[in-house]
Length: 312
Image (cartoon, rainbow, N blue to C red; front, side, top):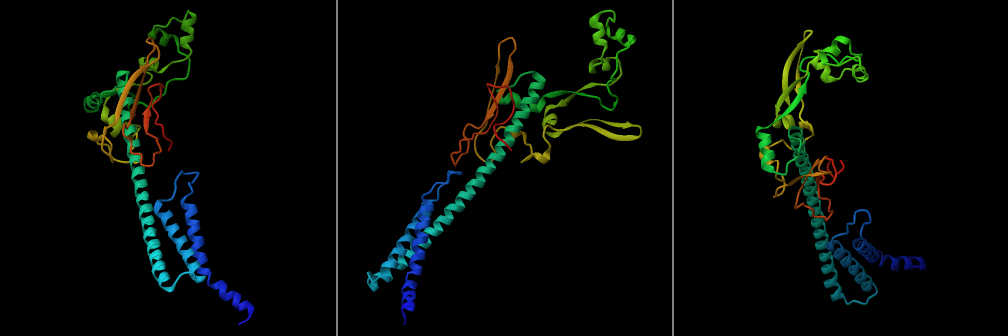
């Protein structure tokens, strides 16, 4: 055996020990490093598996160097291999558990967002009827069961408001004096209310059951104009295709995938002469296993808006 063959022969003894040592060291470094973007670190099982793999590589090197006795190496190496396999399985199991927890968290968020939107829509419809929001779930539920919302409809009338100056006869019918500056200004354009009074268009106020106005949609009438048949409908505030689950009145106030009930708050902001009603709805005990602290909320008690605090 020449010199080159001897070198390759000795070097070959260290290939597998080197692979185990480097792999174990790499796993240790990765396991102890926190991802800057996600803030996530590998599980303890992953670190222990890397440590066992690293120790096994070191022991293999010591064995190649002849430091360990034959009996010792036949005991230590199988033990370390078994430990690596065990921690590898535990790491897989912990990753799988995290994936399942993430799926549970995403489902919770999806359901809570839908519930908050539903309660928000109830509040908006309630305010349309009573000019205020409510912090009483019983009152809001009774509104859904027995209340109604006023809706102005043209029904089968497709006529548009005339875009022209009011004539003298129309002004007289509306009680407008054309001989004054104010009267002349009022005659410049006909608004919707004036057009309705003059019979130029049809506008009727329809009382729509609150639950239909918000969740189901409502048919106002059937029409037959110029031989074309169609129906006039008021669509729900959110269509069924955009929902994550069907509307159920008895479940609107409670969380779908977790136990508990939403908190509904309402108040007025601004001065007493011009109060602005506001509301807020949130989950008092959010499911937050990853400590992201992004409690889902719709509405605001200090600002006049009805939006949620999430982006989709």
